[in-house]
Image 1: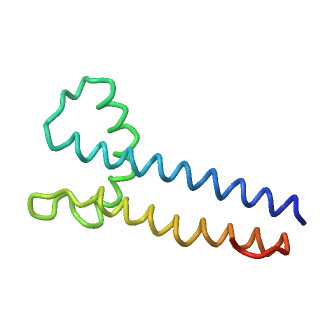
Image 2: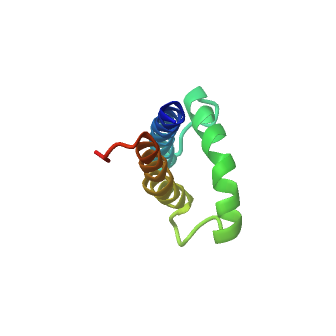
Length: 104
């Protein structure tokens, strides 16, 4: 069972790193959107290409703007934080229980 537990730990750690990186991408994208960047800049195109597919469903449900503020990045960040605290921690706890060890 320790092999499956180690696999769960590895998956949880990789997901945690990927979600943290994506959260920073969302934050940088939101900050750059405040200054009206050049849409042909490769960095801006990358940020929009990575974040817009996630923003679209949120903007359809909530609306594009809440007053003058686009709240879709905040919703995405809150969702990432929820997944990190719920799913990642649950995977780590399950892995430690499968190992038979105590939680750190």
